[in-house]
Amino acid sequence: MYLDPFKLKELPFRLSPDPQFLYLSKQHARAKAYMESTIWFTDGFVVITGEIGSGKTTLIESFLKEIQSDVVIAQINQTQVSAIDFLQAVLVQFGFSPFKMKKAELIATLNNFLIEQYAAGRKVLLIVDEAQNLSMRVLEEIRLLSGVETTKEKVLRIILAGQPELSEKLDAPELIQLTQRIRLRFHLTTLSAPEMRAYIQHRLEVAGAGDRQIFAEDAFQEIFRYTGGVPRLVNTLCDTAMMAAFTASRDTVILADIQQALEELQWVEYSARNALQMKAPAERRPVEPPSAVGAVPGDNGQAIHGRLLVATDGRSVEERMLRVGRIIVGRTPDNDLQIDSRFVSRHHCQIVTTMHSSVIEDLNSTNGIYVKSKRVRRHYLNDGDVVVIGKHELIYVDERMARTRAAMTDTVPGGHIQTGVVDTGVVDEEQLE
Image 1 (spheres, rainbow, N blue to C red):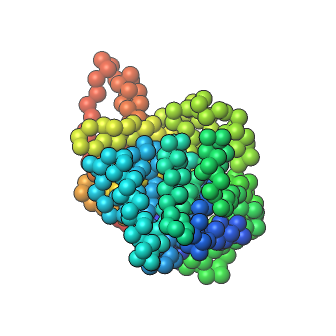
Image 2: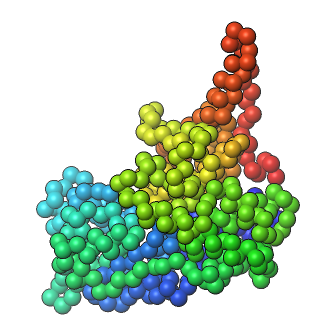
Image 3: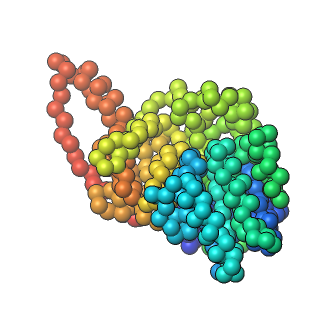
């Protein structure tokens, strides 16, 4: 990677929500203070919303890292569940095994647990990320849980975090009782241009750059034009630009590196992308929606350069076409390819596809990625490669090779050719270095 040329200790623009890299803009500091207020007040019920990639999950991780030892926490990230599934998930977080319980038993167990924790002098906090996916029935269960109280005060503190649709859902007439119990609501907007510049400098400083100026001054305006100040988009563009500078043997990122990264990512300006996304109704968007960190809206006409088959227990569960751009694989719903497994990190790995190759890269996941039983950090994918992620397998099919074989067949008399299969082995970035 580019750590040595840039004299860095670690990657500054990883997509995983690392609390030490949190940049507290004025609005992020305010949102974090609202989260902290749930501990101070007995009726703490806070809602934090923001666009995809605005930093909600990183804020939560930072908040949890600093939380007091007398707080018992249930953190729910999988939100496309039924009411019973949700109650079971909460109890599992509290150490129960509730899978044979009926709903009445689930509710009674939760209520008793909350009262017991209060009597023992402990505070109980429920955090729900990606809360925009919660059904009306689950939100009603949350309202009922928020009402559990002793003779003096409420015993459950709640933080709901999600995309802007969460606010729209909470404003529905049928949820008026829940809305009345929310004490604080805050919406995270994108970073301003000066904040985005400070954000980039902050992450570089944490990664070991000190006060060195790694990005040229004229690069920041271009970064803002194409990211709109969305932290995750900033991370993706800056990381790709640093790779471009590294391959050009430079230890600074200049405007040409930003432009090369934009060409690789196939991005349009943020304002144009945002307008296209606003224009298309959700139900009319393609089955494979363009990623906020990868493809361009309306890129379905692009050539397919590869396919990714997701398998577990010997059966295929999903197939994803690979076009020029980048897809993120991870456990949470905000990924381009979601693998809902406890062995998979929130943002586990990324696959970058160009006209000529596809590369898979670990995003500092807990359990890593494996090719041929070897853990790799970065690997150029070959046709037929099997990448192991936890208990799942990603099987790569290179469509470029299929097209090449078809072209060669067309040019050989009789349509027959003889090919030899060469095992190139695992190509890992550490080996390349």
